[in-house]
Image 1 (cartoon, rainbow, N blue to C red):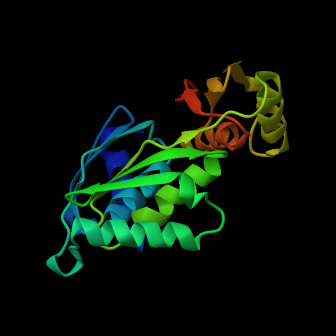
Image 2 (image 1 turned 60 degrees about the vertical axis):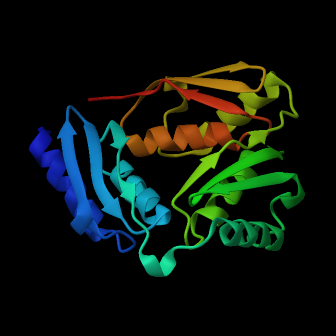
Length: 216
């Protein structure tokens, strides 16, 4: 696939995504690397655009340079955003809200603290991302390791073997403490994401380094 074809596929995908207004997004493609520029009206829309591009066949990497320009109607004071963030985490029983710290500066929310599972970290970020007035999220939350490296590797391997769309034997898994390194080759970005998701889903994983290549 040449660069112009990939660029058109990405544009079509962004136009297809209902939560994204593609009119103000610029797209450049070179050797499988897609650069996104322009502006959107919310941080959630920026992340939705990135997720949509990741699904396009032929995309190997993304350079995310989209700017968030909040409409005047959605702008909020930092203290208001902070209070709403605290409230929404209290309402979500799946996350340990008492262990999460929140700082807001110029609409940028910085999250810190410690959780037991990666899905809890993702849930905190997701909850805050959709709040009105949020221009960006910096996630400094850490996952507290609670299992042995051998068990982590076994859990990841089992998850890959259960996935019918993946050839688990082609994926290398190295575990050092609570840090996982992935290697090998897959057919698409979606497969690569599936492997990385499996690694993050294992209990006790605090860091994943993805060295998996996409066959081209």
